[in-house]
Image (cartoon, rainbow, N blue to C red):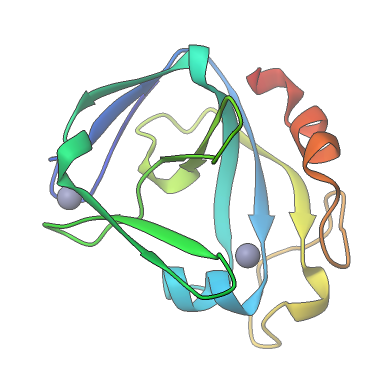
Length: 141
Ligand SMILES: [Zn+2]
Ligand SMILES: [Zn+2]
């Protein structure tokens, strides 16, 4: 599956036919995406390959460690590697394929009151341990 940012500078391949993703409803993701929730997944580095634009990525780090990686040309959220672990975080909306299924909802306690986005699938009030989340997204790894 191929993914790219809005302007097309950043392109990557995920070597899977189908993705399981989670929706994060936290207030930080809301600011970062400008939408009610972020949709993303976690991909083993072996299944991820940059095709172009890795050098066109910048990042902003909040003092708490929350990090936003984005294309410096168009501002789209882009994949980034977890510090110290063999996984990439990948924003689901960048994928061209729609072979994508929601497997979990996290930070449901912070969900926007105005949103109609469902939090029904595997809801977590805050977040599961990262190992549990990776297991839920297991089809990806
Ligand atoms: Zn771009
Ligand atoms: Zn979040």
